[in-house]
Image 1 (cartoon, rainbow, N blue to C red):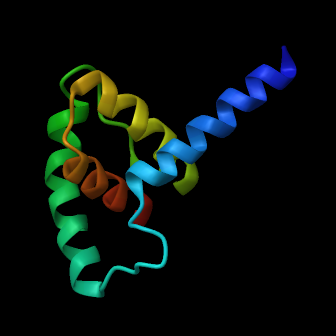
Image 2: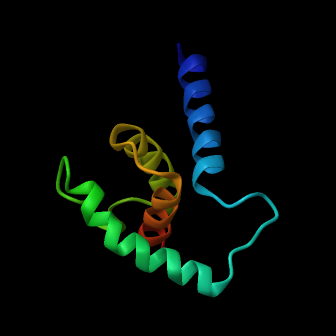
Length: 93
């Protein structure tokens, strides 16, 4: 049971990294990070307040937001670019 749980968590982390991170070897410019941050700041409350109170960015560690946004993206049918913007905002706070 423990191995199966670990495998599921590992798979979720790998999927979250591939969904919410830029392609490997690709870095974002400061301008792109700023654009995503500002877009994410606007979208954060819109998406999160649909079902519950938006959580404060400092509530979770940056790596935890990857898993959280993957789960919430599935539930809310959120487009990938919106999810990336929200993660950029949450991780920068």
